[in-house]
Length: 329
Ligand code: AMP
Ligand code: TRP
Image (tube, rainbow, N blue to C red; front, top):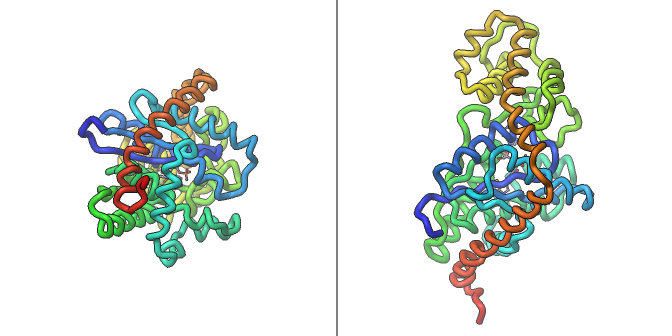
């Protein structure tokens, strides 16, 4: 890279349903980092096909995800922004790193165990964290903004980088995870002991970025809480209320202590009303930006992003081929 800023890389799967957990846990950081860093953001469409999907539907979903990220503030003029599948160097590096990944390590990955149980195991799902490591290491990224659920994958990426460097020379910086202090794990509204997810069958378990204020209010109103009507931050005794406090804090920038003090005796009805309003206010600009974006323009920007990414990735990948003995003869 021609400048001396540190490089940030992150990815998001283009499977519909981008929710407030993705937003507060990851995307808010992605947007901010553009001011200071060399930022690379990738719609990881090869990762998402590790579970069943419909090709025609997927083609649309991928573009919608890209559009949503732009609506959130990812700026293709400031960030390298593209679809993973359009840059074959990701898959090439993934194969090389796979030869250095002990299967014992993959067997321990929580996300794999959960998804394999839910969707059925396949080799892609199993090697998913290796492709993720390749995404990050390909660009020699220093920082990786993600939600808390990706911690284990990041650890594995760091180990792989070290193993590679020990064997082939100092090629990769060891990347650091950048996980927000608050809202790193937004929990499901329907079950505050499991994380909010894109794929859960219950639509009321998550607030989507395009939900109208009315829908947001209904979903927050139906959020599972408890029967002791005091608003208090206590994950053990009051996970539902603690989750709502975190969401409201993430949406308003106010501290949890401050919010808990204000709403302590307000009653759950009034508290939920306030949470809903803060979420609706936070998402209003995203929703209107989404509506004003043009699909053809988004597609054009993604193609341009892929061209730039391919050029940059190829430069880096040539070094990998050289040190691993795989250069053109
Ligand atoms: P994914 O939904 O798996 O594509 O994740 C995209 C980004 O959102 C990743 O950085 C995740 O760590 C983050 N993320 C996903 N679900 C949550 C959640 N419930 N709370 C906070 N961050 C999340
Ligand atoms: N595994 C990540 C998730 O489910 C998505 C992802 C793929 C990613 N490649 C990445 C995140 C590289 C950060 C960096 O959220």
